[in-house]
Image (spheres, helix red, strand yellow):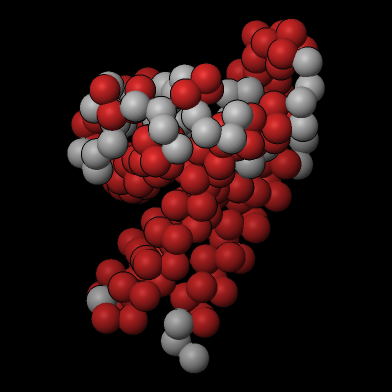
Length: 202
């Protein structure tokens, strides 16, 4: 098995940089909706060190990239207090969706940068692909991913959500590695990145 350490390290660096606006978006929207928890914990910032989870942001992405599996990782979760959020469950959903939305916007920005920095097209394209992957991956409705907040907005019983959360990580691994979902997300992200970079060059 061939292991490309340089590419794996680049993937980790890109992923870390992408989790920063993702987690910042969660914190900023929560703050705007009246929950000061993220601000009190120092999360309303674009400082990458404030959002890193050393296991999920560095180690797991490095290993998954080295061994050629589905790229996998996470940032340090932003804590929120739903009782302080305006809009209740819908406010919580807005906070959750802010993260994936920021990754789509960031991919668009990377495509625009590629118009002027042609020498960095390969790195920018890789970053846009990972950014779109992160957006789609987080829309899976399994706790603790952002998409699981759709279940809360749909008013499923709290006990059911808590029970699902207990096995969420294991369920997520099973879904990603035992079905075609992980491959589909990867292919969709790649096609999306190609279209982005092609669109900005027409």
